[in-house]
Amino acid sequence: MRGGIFRGVRAYVISIAVICTTAALVSTIYFTHDNLQWVAFLTGILIASVLAEAARASRSEWVLMRRTAQLSSMKDKLDSEVRGRRSNEKRITDIQARSQLVDETMLTMIVLIDPDGHCRYHNRAFREWLHLKEELIDGRHMRELFGTRAYAGIATAVRQTLDGHPLHYEYLQEDSGSAVYRLLVEHVPQFDADGHVTGFYFLAVDITRRDDQPLSGTFGAETNMTVQQHYGENEIAGQIHAPFSGQIGGGRDEGKQLIEAIQEGEFCLYCQLISPLPIDSGKTEHYAILIRLMEEEGGQVPPGAFFPIAEKTGLMPYLDRWVVQQVLKWASKRQSPSRDNNSIFFINVAAATIGDPGFPDFLKNTLDEQGMPGSILCFEVPDSDLAARNNSVAEFIRQVRQCGCNVALSGFGRYDASFDRIRGFQVEFLKLDGGVILNMLNDPAELAKVVSINRIAKKIGVKTVAELVESDEIVAKLCEIGIDYSQGSSISLPRRLAD
Image 1 (cartoon, rainbow, N blue to C red):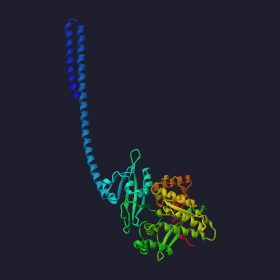
Image 2: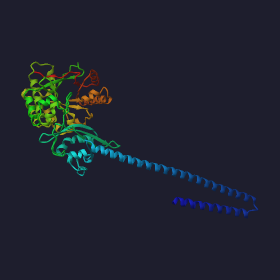
Image 3: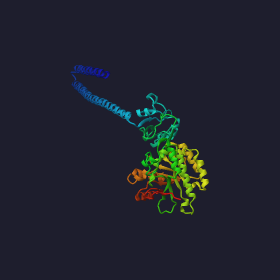
Image 4: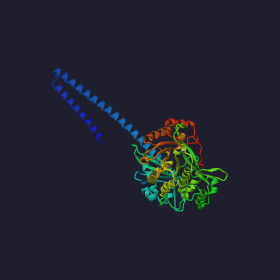
């Protein structure tokens, strides 16, 4: 508005200036009409002035037209951007509505946690799990929502996720009556444009079997939450084997029947060779201990069939102690010395055993009774346990090492290959996850992960063991990489640990 007034006034001023100049020149010419030189000079000035003003007026008109065209173009672009923004806002609103509809109907519990541990978003499944209203969840800390004891079990995992590491694990939530929920949990970190973690999504799926009895409380109750151990090949965790369900069943009697099965000799131990690489290197061979339940027809029931019952009834520490006793008893009865005298026996330990305060004393007494050194045993601690229960695992490792035993971290590299978790822990072996080994010839990313793990392990003085080695091609590649040991059907099938 102000610019338009200025342009109008300026036009009038220019016109008046041209008229005044013309009048002055004409008057001068009139008074000097007898001097032709002055008349010619002043006439030239007059013509030059008129032409200059005409050129200036023409240029101003051209500038005005150009600015008007630019303004019109900018206005069209602005209108187009406004229409596009409104269309995008409508599309985003529709997507958010559909996304919220999906979130609210999913069985998966979805929770967005900020860097300080407070809940910023949740879906209906999570509200129903907690039995809390929406306003009682938003903004509250995980410790308040999950309960102090439950949160303590996942606090380490939360810290690692907030450091940028995605995690995936299973855990059991038990009550005093041995009822159980089995949950599959995933932590997905969120990053900003600069790569800083802005929080993470806590995703949980209830994978409790139908024959499991759910907890008669809420997730926020003071419960005993333990990460489920991941077991080796051909072991389907969480599925009840049909023949075994006939041998052990009946709800309240499951624990009693499991103990009777152990006492009556229905359980037996197998060992599988952990071979050095190259296979003909002459280095000492080691063995992985496997537990099986024998059926009446002579068949074998894998641990995936009875471990869930042992976990639910709190008998995993009992079962692990039995395994340790049998291995040490077998080793002490061997009559003739052989190259196996320096062999190490790898034993999986359950999460409940890791948290059992009486296990270290039992181990020391059993070693003394059988007259065996602790160095013949290596306890396998799952990498997922280390992520979720850092403090109890650290204490377990410290105490079994005081007994002279070795420690291996199993399932390493399943979801990431972070060595941060083992910082401060002294372990002798890293057992590379079998899924990574199986896929490494077909997946360059998995192959690079194996190479990286082995290189760093060599630098810190830890031996590497590849699990689920199923082909000669994999053996050859492992030798090329420099992996120390291998375990799998291509190396050796399990055999009975006989007297």
